[in-house]
Length: 180
Image (spheres, helix red, strand yellow):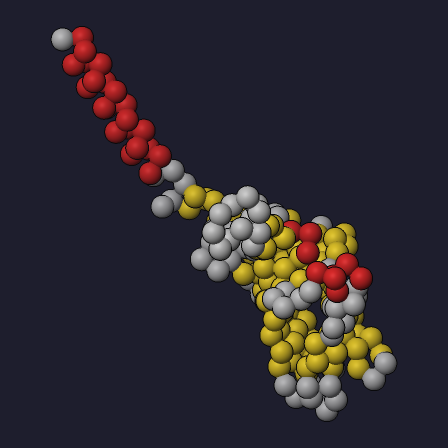
């Protein structure tokens, strides 16, 4: 009789644990504002945190619209990731070479006159790499790490005809509890 009572107690405890764990709140990242926009006589720029099917932001989308009749050049070597007002380093993106990051010889992107340009970027300091010991196609794969809570931003350097136009854009990342 004691053994059957223990089994019933264990099953009830397990069921209760499963139910309460399944209803536990989930934390999700939110951005204020959702998209930060700046505009000047040369361009309009948008800076937007991206979550891509995750509960947290892991990258940003930068969009620049050239409002002039001459090309603009985004200087990735001087454009910086800002965290809580501090310069934390450069941004990286698909196709960038590690040696260019280290030597700060990242090629600029050109925004043609009257055109728009969009690129998904992530802070270099937040990159994560799958362990090389993992087996399969993800061994050593580089992925974007989570964007931390707090003020996150970009100090954007754009050149046109030898002149530099600088803009700071920031968003505040916080977490919110939601029920599953």
